[in-house]
Image 1 (spheres, one colour):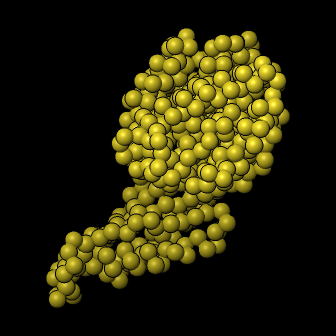
Image 2: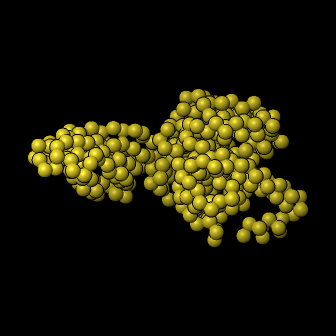
Image 3: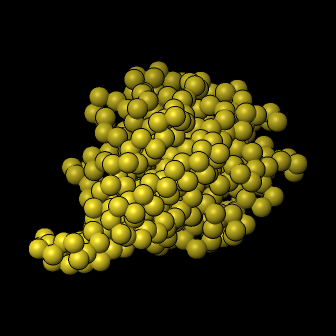
Length: 380
């Protein structure tokens, strides 16, 4: 589809588009090879720093993240554009430019960075309408709190609005989609651990079976959100306990996630889970402990910013999802919106976070175009 459309463009626009596609492709694939874990994106950071310096910027580091700024014609408004940098602990299959290590850009962050570098390149060549801050954020994956740390480091100081793109393999290549209100769910990542007493299985009555308590908790917790299942999701993705087959387990842990759109549901469901854990303790003589590892708020797009995007491009309406995104932290501080960017075609159908995820770089042209329009639009 895109190849046909590109070939029919006027010669001047065709040459620019093809040059931009070449740049997006080269940068995306170079970044793909550098895939690094959250908060350890050193080579990725150095690559971006060097490209920004070549464009004439003076990038500022926030841990492994980076920011820089292009001055606009207007002095009364400043927008920010954000891309995430980290990769996932996944070994990739069947890719000629895959990373050497055990990490993979399986969530499209390589494409996100390439589009933002393309936008920075545009702004370096021609002054944008409004001042633009480019934010390359570390640590989006795994609950490491990269967005919060970027905010603490001043990434959105004096910024009026912020925008981001996220690749989406469920949408056709080049299709944009967004919506106002909650678009991504909030996430509470926590463990429920049970401490018991070990004994030989032949003397089971002498022990307190922590694994049995955890299994009981697992079974009871499956219906914890039955009355609010449309707005919440509860899942235990890992259950572990015990040391050897012949002993009563002295410890066991359920690794849990609670996804939500309404914060009032969180307290209600966490209290129910607490009562279920207490019940398991009473049955098996254990003691439980709840450890919360991270809390992400729901991602709530600002209606005005969504209208700005709708005014500039052809955008479909997106339904809320139970996936999490730490872009939500920026939107708790300032107005903004995140937009899905479709990357599905006949060759690329794998979901995000899979070892076969990939995309045609032509999809990135649409994202680069949206960034260009946001930077050069005079509309408030």
